[in-house]
Length: 344
Length: 237
Image 1 (cartoon, each protein chain N blue to C red):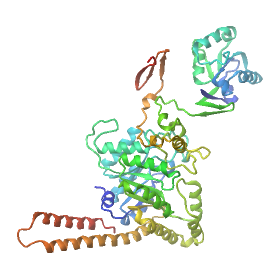
Image 2 (image 1 turned 135 degrees about the horizontal axis):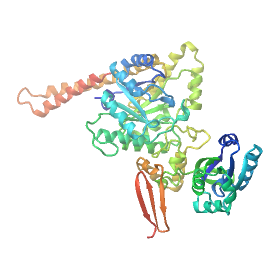
Image 3 (image 1 turned 180 degrees about the horizontal axis):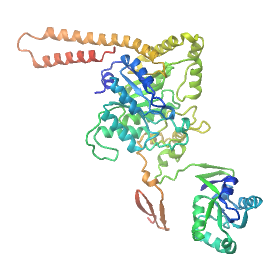
Image 4 (image 1 turned 90 degrees about the vertical axis):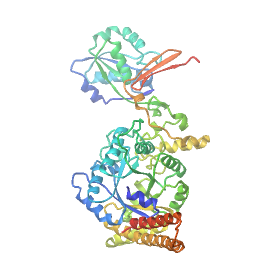
């Protein structure tokens, strides 16, 4: 079973990472990045031809992660595959043992390195989520029965900074209705805006992983503000990066990321860190987040243990009522489960 | 209408063999609106070809704003220019791909050269501007989107709402263009019909968008044929 799903369902603050496959067959560097983050994250996303640039497929790299004992999240976009190929990719992922899929529209190919390619978009992200939900129910998009059903934990993306937000929320709601089990957001830098966004979707019961893109420099922040949709780095953070000497940028980047996570932590189920090559910083940030998470989980376990002790004290020596035993077993299981989901 | 743009003269010249006798056809409807094949453009094309040494044996445009893509009318036009047409080795067509094929039919399989690229079906917004608002998908959903087609206005043709790529209201694929979904949202909001957007739109039936398609028509019924099947609609009651 997907550990990401278990962690989110248990309400344990989740941290995920991300790698981008290479253009060419030298995958070692990307795998090293994943390995560097792996001890501190629940799962690692593998992007699907990010920015519409041709690379190794997400599926292949997800399989390599699995072989290294790392839980992957297959990213799958609507840009390059029609409905047959999309469903086939999800079945293929399930056959390999990949348990998480993040289903998204995908950047337009004019932004990438094959701008003359035919844009597919046979399905949109809502329809793709619906297709995945159908597969999980044992049917394809045409209603034909499957021989063996994939077990996938399926996620969707969200953009808290989207304007107008109301329009974005309408689409997000459709994603939930189509079966999205978690959301992963575009980079968050403005905690107030994120809170406003999170409040709007808090009643939906779908966990949100807030996107954390590590700031590498003031120039990168300005570039994102100008060129990356849905990303807005506040001027204070740009100034802060600008005032940081080059050799201190990694520390500063981690510090800023942790500060944002601290601010938004009450409003999300976890964070998705996009390291853009700075896997060491991502690992460091994840470790720090986990420290607090462990304390939270410890305190939940302590509470359960107190309940358990209480219960045990009330259990009579003879003719024990069966519901008390069941309750005891339930508490013991919960404690065991939480321990198993405790981040490293 | 079919929006067309003339091919560069060098490309057209490349189609013509030395000494080839050419007859030029224009169209008085869409190509005239596109200023790619109306009478003035056809006259100018004849001059430009002659200047380059091409033997142009004649030219013709349908009368009274007529379309070149109506076979019966184009047959008549061929008949009216019988002599020159018979002399011609080939026909340069300044019209859309439909008009181009019509000339082939009207000349019993004559050799035709496309003089234009057919770029889209559009609205002639002004005399000098044509914009595409329909993608000819065969399955209109504009009722739910306030009359604005998301398949056409959205660069990705998304049916259930915008991608996350819009920046300052502009499309991720082209920052000079408004995000089609934001336009749809604003229009529906103004119409008080935002609820339209909440319904799931199922994937397109691309078989209705399959090529080649045909339509058999009469004043009372029409039959559309495509890979999705045959669809007859009565217009009587």
